[in-house]
Length: 376
Image 1 (cartoon, one colour):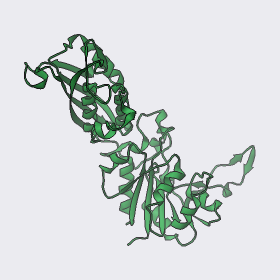
Image 2 (cartoon, rainbow, N blue to C red):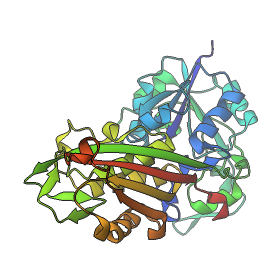
Image 3 (tube, rainbow, N blue to C red):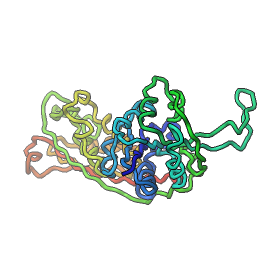
Image 4 (cartoon, rainbow, N blue to C red):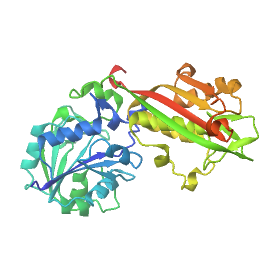
């Protein structure tokens, strides 16, 4: 069995990248899979690791698990070093190879050279030389003494665990190990292994295929029964009626169904998993805030919302005069035009709990598509 564990870091907020894109770079789709999965599979094709650990943000761990169950998914920390510490708790092998999923086009030769040098130092690091002149604080520097450090970096697990315990933060594993007195060996880096930092970097990274033009649909269904002494909200709009809905939140049954349809479209579970009614944080919360969080999530993991269609089943109250405001309210949150938000209202001809005027039921359908970063 291999004595090397692979750790792929994918917990970053991608702040610099998202100045020009609402999608996190680790969730850009390459062909028909997100970047982090593309990179993980690429590494597996190059070497038989004893274990593969994907470090993700807290909000994305469960979603990632639904893509590929061969990997161990670990919640990241506030910064890179803490994310590595979290991953190392699950590393039992003698060596650990750490890389960033943003460094998408690492080559097989690069990995083989790193692994072949594993006994030469406490950490093996790929590095590029500098061709241009270098000036630091108005002073010229010998460019032969300057290196551009890349990942992946291969470390002795015990050495790296000790090094990252320091309070001082380091930009990479080799810096932490060197500061702790460890030895560093440099192998030849590869310009093809450029890291995605800004959106413009994508033009220089050649191994990434354009995303497929794929569309996904999801449906949602929810019911709430009436109660007195609460305001009623449907599709984010206050309804003029003495009745409200029994619910942990504000009871906007239409938005709840819509949230489920959006989550269904991207395969991300349901509203109860994200906003459980056992959590006091969501007590009496405005459902528009929940919808905004879901929309931000859907878009950050690589999708555009195309359109939604909502059917409200209500014997009472009458809703025709609210439909336009409902469409505009939802369109603003969904970041699409009102024409792409359809709201219908119907009775059940006196049948069932809706017909008995005990509550309201809502069916929602959403359509999303993969964000085409290649066309930007």
